[in-house]
Amino acid sequence: MSEHGYAAGRLNLPFVGISTFGKRPYVADWDAIDADVAVLGAPYDFGTQWRPGARFGPRAVREASTLFSFGHAGAYDHEDDATYLASDVSIVDIGDADIIHTKTEESHANIEFGVRKILAAGALPVVIGGDHSINIPCINAFSEQEPVHVVQIDAHLDFVDERHGVTAGHGNPMRRAIEKPWVSGMTQLGIRNVSSTAKEGYEDARARGSDILSVRQVRKLGVDAVLERIPLGARYYVTIDIDAFCPSIAPGTGTPSHGGFLYYDVLEILQGLAQRGQVAGIDLVEVAPAYDPTDSTQILAAQLLLNFIGFIFNHKK
Image 1 (cartoon, rainbow, N blue to C red):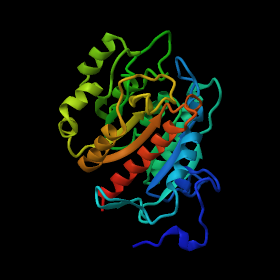
Image 2: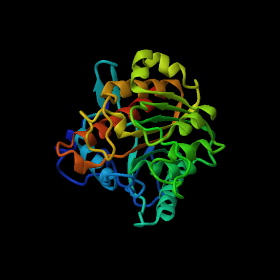
Image 3: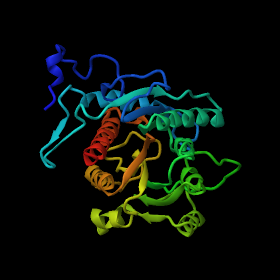
Image 4: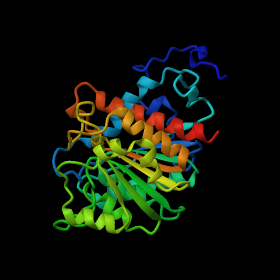
């Protein structure tokens, strides 16, 4: 068993030191990424249609992630009788993509560049947004990869084609994704209530093969039945909008929608995905910390990501 970090001579409490993701090493040279997982911040929120603030999401999620960085030899889960994220899983934080204010194309290009560097290094890209438009450059970065099936966990369908010339806002990413020849299909979970996507968007999504389930439908079917609807053995790109969760536990987002998922609703789906196929990429978006003075939203985001990464690499053993 790996030794605990305490043996190194420092207690290194969560509030001490620099807030990289999980207090993992920072790699400034994107040509020198050598890890299983590389975390990239995408602090872009000019694609929002209502409340801004998700530009501060990466910083907040990183700071929250220090809560889970006590230096233990991995995290032991007594329910699963498994130790996750021990020393055999290397995670690095490569900082943020450069964002150019008012410049969507340039900012998105910088995010895409970062994801491509991660993929070229053979690492799993984990991108922290930012609003959901940052999924567009993330998916673009997979153009030279094997096909991926997109699994979206979200309150909103985000399947708007174009409005007043806007094609790369946070209501457009799933429409942009489904156009790509390297996106083999799409599963959209948690979609509910008043949505920014009109009826024709839903019809378009279904016509293109998307499987759309609300929170209530997911709960009625159960986790196993939902997973059975997702292609077995595929490569998955998982995009998680924090507003998929009920604002009672995740109020720190620009477009909260009541009636959302609770923590284990999503965690069990992610654990099942990790066992069902290969997770090729992850983004988590729309954390806007200013709307949650308790920090609960960003703690939820950090905990979810760390658990998901743990599931992925534990299944590979």
